[in-house]
Length: 396
Image 1: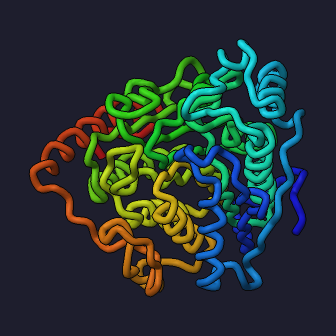
Image 2: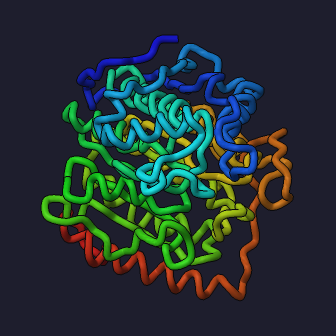
């Protein structure tokens, strides 16, 4: 187990063969208060499923134990003032007035003993994943404990205290990498978008439930970046009830052409599983097949991939989905060799015997026409506005 602390240039014409599952038992320890919907044990459950299916063995797979991000590493994005308040609140069990103004002590960002240490370790794991891929030796690296995309330089929000995604993208960009961040979490990646809104070396593409019906209330199709970043922030807000086919239409008609046109050196992807049907904090109607089809398409693009977890508030369905994502990342899973399982969101269970993919979920026929119409409207708007900025025709 060897953390990768230095970035190195890689030859984009030759894809490496190693895949890293980045995890530590320390990340499975209870962190957030028991009453919080955010369950840190999801990553360990995903690892256990993957291990039971022999997805963590072989010459092409490595488990890597990360170290916590240092104060200086976290300071690359977060202010010193903020990090000191975060440390202080965790030690004392109470926030100062300044800490309260920074978002500490809310239902989604409660005060607890590990509120600095856990995010620092999770961020260290995402930085480790990025460094492994940037070393040129790894085709993919997955940190299921990452994906805290709401945190701002001086504000916590949405269960997110430290923005590991921004830190990883910043480090990759600083090494001269052209970075594409794809966010498949059901919530808009406001913290990441804001960090790169005026930059073109990191493109953000977010497919999420509309801010009209879900936190954080941002991520509309009109948010496309500013100045040198115009056209490099892309948002596909989806209506309540979006189902697999509608979701995949948006992915294929927006994300795939833009990723190809942008031609990134590395793809960073957030795999929040809170778009799954029945998630208690969102309103989409997906099965994990939609996420799997997106991941398979990304891997076919032939770019190294850094993947993180994210949201997902049905822990069992989330863990099962992440195990499926890992099977595809490491080249062991497809629709043919990982058949449909016995459980999943349709049956309300999380059994994976016989396969990790959910069975098909029938969408509400009465709702489907409304969903299709809104998805088509949003997709057409994004293509009209953003595609010409990248030399793409909105009508092709």
